[in-house]
Image (tube, rainbow, N blue to C red):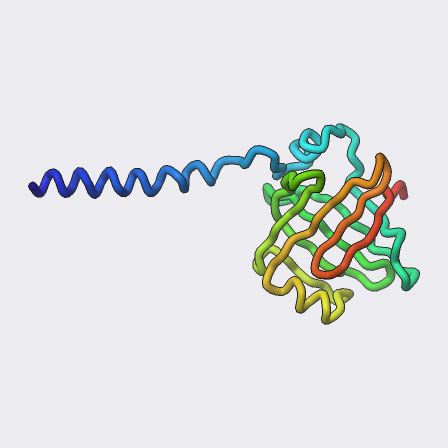
Length: 153
């Protein structure tokens, strides 16, 4: 009887751990590195820096897609003001768009972030990236959105 209970307990533990181990593997349709992102997008020369064209204050956001510490990072720098936000995570296909979701420990809001953005993203959130033709990108998140062109500077 005792052996049967131990065996049943062991089977239960293994069956509970199997889903966890499958989640630790890379998710199909997601990218955790620059090379995986370019493969996911089907663009070997996908630009990694973008400049906002829809700002109304004359200070465009510069967005960089970086790879550091084994993760992809989106870094937003507000021209003449400094860091707006940076977040770590994977970028995944979501229908026709791509998105990166992040928790509060994965985002850093900089001094250029206004209080509305701070409230919207302080507990985590997501940025959605939408291709608009071959040379434009819309990025949206936290109640904000902007249109970007590749930065050639």
